[in-house]
Length: 104
Image (cartoon, rainbow, N blue to C red; front, side, top):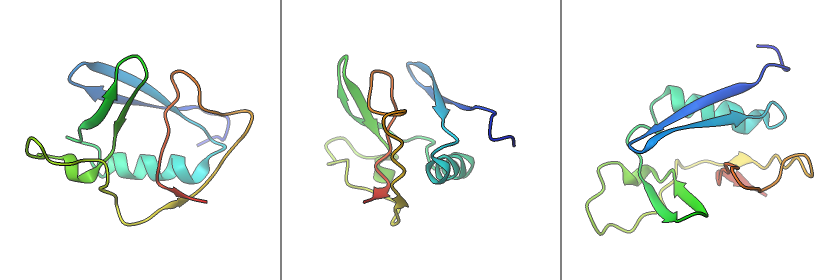
């Protein structure tokens, strides 16, 4: 794949689809996201924390088929990906998608 080519993934939810652009400048996170998506890791995960007009948080691997009332948000895959901050080009802004699988 050319480094200039954009990678767009589509996240299908029960409320519609979301397009996510993965940046070439964050190689490790891009590769990790694509690997997990291809393995089906994100299939069936819940958005366990939603704040209207602000954010939706998901990714807890224990949220698949979680019973009502189960505390969610602490499940992980057992590894981290090295931080790849590209500031000021990419930063937190409306419509951004973040990943917490990093170490500083």
